[in-house]
Image (cartoon, rainbow, N blue to C red; front, side):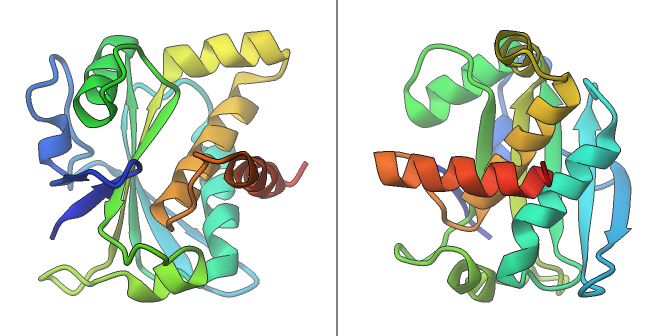
Length: 194
């Protein structure tokens, strides 16, 4: 199955990490964190890898809250990888052509161009094993820490916001326009539950 990078460049999910020094893709055997949404009883499985910069529970909740309104199928998988600035810079150069680190990148399924939100969730394809892999969210813990200090907020809140932001990208939301950026900030903040 092909994956869509947030800039709509196509990259194979596992190939996105290939060749990056010290990087590993979120492995299939990564710690699986399951959380049941009490309102909808839908369960999205989050596979986390890398060095966690903070408590994972609020980050999981933010991902679930970001995906919940759009009807992502129960049992769908989301990879969550924490990497250092060096690896994030390599990924950013390779996939966006930007020679610096960034806070979050998302690698998701190739969706129809206009699909976002619920339409994107309905367009998610099943893997050969019958599972739905929504995509991977990659976060630089170091960049998140710098942003949290600059914003004078807890690191866990910054990481949770970035995870929700990445999850929204997996459902076709884009922040390359002023309107899109404002919408994604609002949706990401809403996912934190204030």
